[in-house]
Length: 259
Image: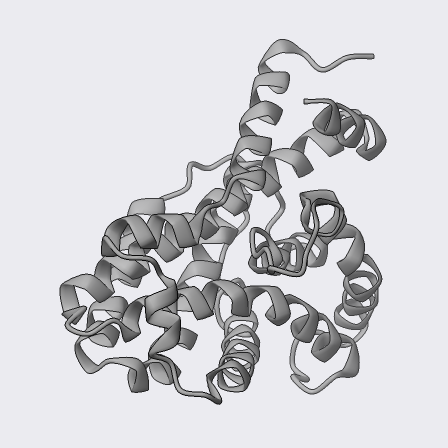
């Protein structure tokens, strides 16, 4: 059994999106200067602060973004409206500088998760299902390549495999008790694992906003690049999941890795 031509083209596009994220490169191109200069301007304790902020942002987003969506598998995603909303929050963050990130990030993350769910729905996901909701959250772990990662650890299927046990336990918990309990160990563990990778992109965003005179306009553009990155990750992720439902996980993974 082989993939139909259109499905093969979709999988090639998915791999292009998932394996070549380049958020830092896009931000560097926008700034016209290496992003490392922005990192040098961050406070010494900023790494721990970023970790705390990302965990808080993900927790709030999980409980706010997907719950209000209706099932309409295959409905086209409205990515532009979400970009405009995130750009607006970035403009506020850029105007007030780094201290505003603690307020702006949870709002931006919730909007992005809503956009991710919208994209999932356009790829025929049943967005009210527990599995689809968790698949939306997984997107924040994609495309964040740490300097210590090698190709075997940072590839798309490697990240999914690393999260698999936590995803299963979180799904079992939600199925039994719902999303009401934020401190449930199964959910906390999943959020911590995803936040470890999400914090990489948040750090890149913070470094950009630390550059002097970035201003409101610059903050809006940085946030547009930020959501554009995760919309690309979502599109690739849910194309793969759609094809897995059609052809089976093993075949899609084998074909993906052969591209």
